[in-house]
Image (cartoon, rainbow, N blue to C red; front, side, top):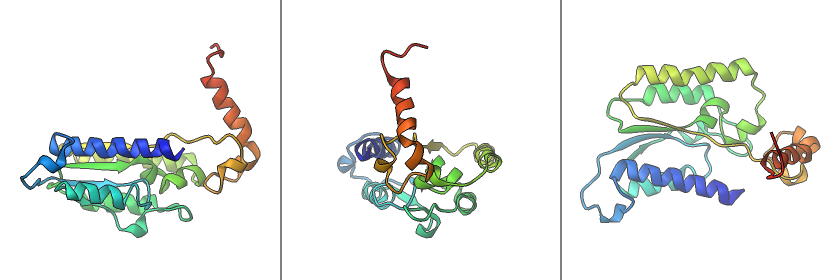
Amino acid sequence: MEKNFLKVAACVLLSLMILVTGSTNCAAKKKVVKEKILYIPHDSRPIVNRQTTEILEKAGVQIVTPPIELLGDRENIGDPDLLWDWLNKNAKKDLTAAVISSDALLYGSLVGSRKHEYDGDTILARADLFGEFRKKHKKLPLYVFGSIMRTPRTGLASGYEEPDYYRYYGTNISGLRNLWTSRSWKA
């Protein structure tokens, strides 16, 4: 699973590099890039937060990220309402683009997307905020990325990042995934 996540993170990073520099060869650029990107990662893990921003900063891109305490991690699911406040306060006219995680803004973090206890109305209200943000910032290029929930083969394999019910139903959920992706399954 971590390999798939790293592939997705690499694709997001590569897309950002192409967006900002017009190529993937950042070292060949001699001029100072004046792009400024607002970035809300999935959470505070180094691979999606610090390491991603460091690479882009080395390419000459100014990155604006929320304070680490607003981002979730493995134990703390984060606070999507505070992240929305931060996003609205920091969406300035001098930005080149905004690259934001739907998992962070809907659930607080990637782990929060699996373990939250928000009701459907709360999630839908937050989803509507993307449309409101788009209306307020029509000229700002907006890139929203999200994740597809993983389905470990067993509840035991799910570790502590999955909701409690996964320990009891994980094998069945994974089995359904296998049924849907099986070549022998017919609609």
